[in-house]
Amino acid sequence: MEVRREFFCYIAAVMKIEFEAHFGHETKTIELVAPSGGGQGYQLMIDKYYQGRLIKTQGKWVGKFNPGCDLTVDDINILGEMIDNALA
Image (cartoon, rainbow, N blue to C red):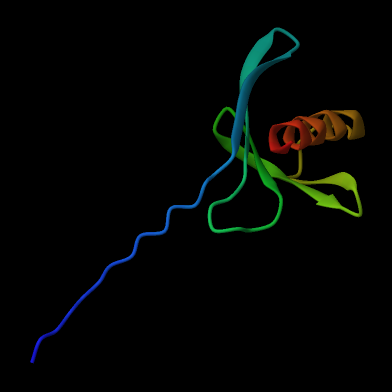
């Protein structure tokens, strides 16, 4: 009896936007990452620390952030626009 084994590797294309932003006198690395394997929204990382996620619902970007994250509605809209432009 012959046993045949096949292994399949699925590699999901992951979108990542990375840039530097200035917060007062500090420069921080910002990453927006679409989670591999699907998931909802885009993870927001600031200096490699998870801050929450951005989700587009009913055509508007909404932020679900950790306590203490000081992003404003304007910040969310700017980040959402960056994602939209990257997907276009």
